[in-house]
Length: 423
Image (cartoon, rainbow, N blue to C red; front, side, top):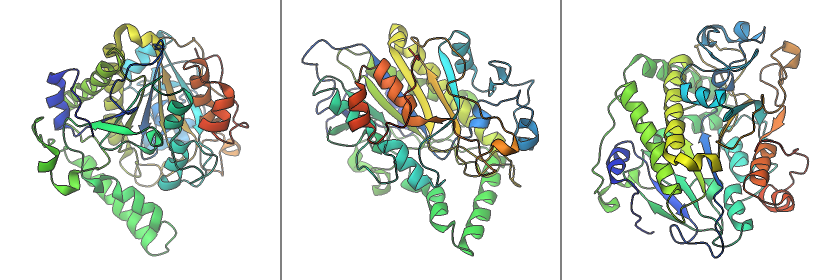
């Protein structure tokens, strides 16, 4: 792996404290293209764990919303209004400001082709871009780099290891400002998938997760352990190597937003360098909210908002050449459960941001929350295939031909209608 310099050394030490690393795709970091390098850029943010779309973009104007959501509903007088039906969560202040300028839109009923509600399966389908689970062994962003031609574009992933979405024939190098987070961080949600069908272990494990979530919500988060930026990987404990990154909460909201904004600005710093990467992916964990959802999502959405704000401001003039898509593997149930949370669902919300977006309303259709309109009488019914959204961004914004999109990047996706008119 190549040792790569930070674009902003002052940010390096801060990121070391929140456990982030960066991987660059394309053989050598920031290789110069053989021909004229387009300025178009794309960032994909994956919110792992099943982000609740009805909290991200609450349909406060839907007459069934408040009744289904109960205590986890976002109050209409606190929500950041978008139109007569939809708003944004009050923590998404930066996203809302962009939306008012026509630089952010929502897709409020979107999903991948997977319907199993399993973290394992849904994340595989999301990141491989396949029509079915385990249908492809590489990630669709990596295949995008392939079809765009050798050395025509560089890719980057933020996380302790390159996520599946960026794995494939294009090899990765890495840069790490600090350690990853213990690889057991995501273990509970994965074990839940394993035990969900067990009549004894399934309910017991679910109750254990509920208790743990409520306990965490009641306690202030610990301060993150800071390892100096100069620390060498060889000196790190074995369980810190190659772990999937989950950014720990900061001791207070202000510090958390500052760290998140620095993450976004640092990523932007890499992307604006001459010959820098044009495609990036970020993974943010911690969205599996079976209990105590309100407090958890207040914190996580504030962090996400600050990351996007840092990316926006850090890109400067290049923001007009960038499209950012925030997505998740599945949504949550429309109804609140008995522990102040929601369970694995189907349709969720994707955020699409960028300085070159065309003004418009929601992306896709809204199926409403009427009981007869719910998917399997429990979830938001998807009206839009996630692959169609990504095909539209890659085609209109990045210039990838439709034949390559439907033959290589998203195989067997001809039935997923391409979203057009975004840029």
